[in-house]
Length: 391
Image 1 (cartoon, rainbow, N blue to C red):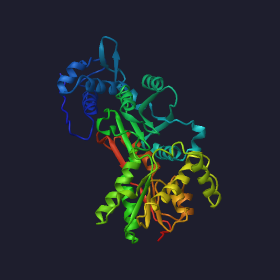
Image 2 (cartoon, rainbow, N blue to C red):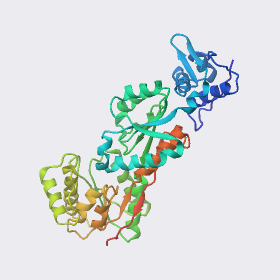
Image 3 (tube, rainbow, N blue to C red):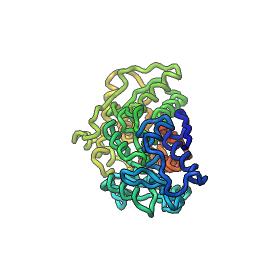
Image 4 (tube, rainbow, N blue to C red):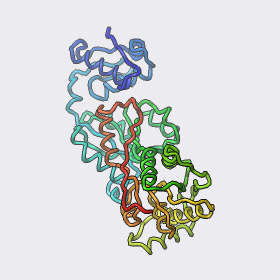
């Protein structure tokens, strides 16, 4: 009988602790080829875990070619245990866009470049699995030529229901990258999911402190879709920096454009187009982004109509900031994202740059075991870009 010891508070997921200990028994020849492993119920009892966790541990051994399963018979040690060590290690990349059109999508393309540039260091081959996720995972799990290390979701997921569907594929790890669209479901993530997000809160805190060091004391905050996790965290970071520096914020100057930027009114789109024509920036293809520029000018105007004095506007993204900068008001502005660096360069406002390529690299580190998957969420620190400070 084998002995299994687990540390439920450790950095390594419990199912991985179990599978590694069983693998060690196999490598040390204590469990020769074709030996039947204890069944799931016995493994669970030995390790003091649930049946699901025990099954995940055995499934991991099967996926690596170390063991095999006979229907209604159980799990057995593979005759050629080392077979799994020579299979090509692949990382599935799930993205809403086709590979040949990825260049047109700045965020997803930057993350993918981070994967491509660093995958060789870990011996991984990124491979798009855009269509039938379930069929693709089954195919690569069953393949004797490839070893599926995990799946990276370039556009994340949203809400507990969508996250729970990924639990169905356990123990295959899933890495959600991009913006935090989980709807606050991080506390109850399935065990096979890890998230890599930008630290929106600390990035916003940096931006507000930058303007405070420049001498600004009275602020408006320009946002929209305040229920969005990213924008809510950015607003919270702005407010905390203001408070930590002993300043007062007037709630009337938290100007929220609602969800107008998702499907902007034609007048906002036209306003954004007028601002673009009057700049050296050139054209922005997507109407909703032109609408956000128009919305930035509109919301700054709304803030001024409150009659409350402020010298700086903290905007939750660069499109709003560019519109606010071009409104004609003598107000310092800061933005966020730096997806299109030309916006802050042309507008001359500081912004916060998200390192999307680093997110891709961190995802590989999680799959390689260099970052404990048990931490569930990794946040990447963004970088403040001062630009030409106003005011």
